[in-house]
Image (cartoon, rainbow, N blue to C red; front, side, top):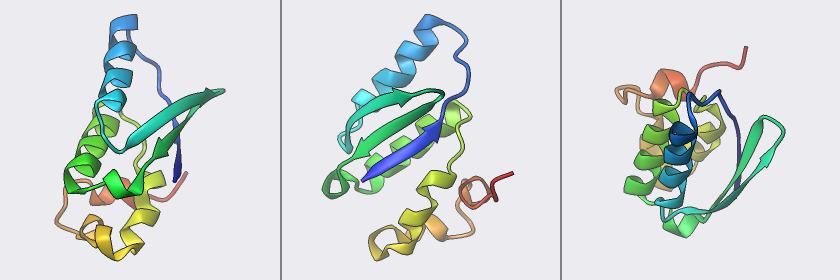
Length: 98
């Protein structure tokens, strides 16, 4: 599975390094490559368990990166918990693109 996200500006080289270190530490991330101001992230779905997905959501939110590319996952039974309205990321995940 490929996930395309829009990157925001990093505040320093160390800030950028910590973001990519967070991706590298996630067992579900198989790799990534930059395409202009976007980042294509490879996801290994068999490794994308609840913890790995929550870590990915936390990382993206920490760097103020839109969660909407993850919304299609909520349609799968395994990830149905993503769509629960009481989840604090629900509004960010299902925000309309503007």
